[in-house]
Image (cartoon, rainbow, N blue to C red; front, side, top):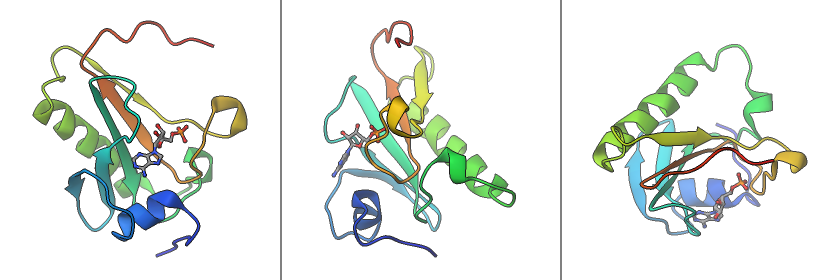
Length: 117
Ligand code: AMP
């Protein structure tokens, strides 16, 4: 599995940097965002270092399904499944991607408003 020693999410995945882990398996991990933008703000990552959704190719179907399943299950556990939630993945500088390791933000727990540009 590819990892990067300089990547904060790889270091969270390895346990080197502590985080509030909500879910983990062989492929996927989910933890609370350190600077939450909503009452529920969870980061979902692959353990493998994949730079962004732009680097996803053939053969990643199982991983992507696993990430989506994790998001949906956590939305239920965090009681936002009925009220609604947003899954966002930023890709590249213009989208504001700060951490260059594929991740989804799971946001909910309040009206999130329209997407702003
Ligand atoms: P993005 O701008 O899409 O790359 O989002 C990166 C997210 O990672 C931000 O919401 C940060 O607050 C979050 N983040 C950065 N470092 C940590 C950390 N050590 N633990 C949890 N969340 C983090």
